[in-house]
Image (cartoon, rainbow, N blue to C red; front, side, top):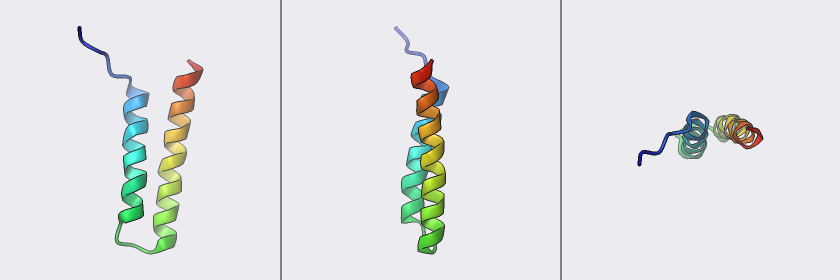
Amino acid sequence: MRHALIPSKVRAFAHRRMALSALRANSSLSVRLKRYNHHSEIARELEAREVSK
């Protein structure tokens, strides 16, 4: 049996990974924190959408 991928879950996972990558980037702390918060917010929104369906 094949399992269907849920696009919002895949995107949320990708944004969580981008958030963690932002913390390890070679840039200033303020830039890293801004990128981390941005990607985390998107991941939270996508997960909330999935829960409300």
